[in-house]
Image (cartoon, rainbow, N blue to C red; front, side):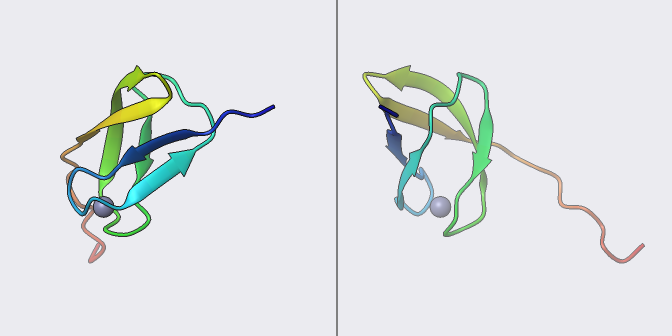
Length: 60
Ligand SMILES: [Zn+2]
């Protein structure tokens, strides 16, 4: 039995579900593509925090 964890993107509020992750792990929102970090896991619910990422300079 695989328990999926659920959460919501703090930016666009898209509901997310993911196989078990650990605190501190990062994922990206499929909707707005923001990088989110797992801040806490409460009873199978993810508390997600936006991570500020510097965009790569694709021009070089
Ligand atoms: Zn999002």
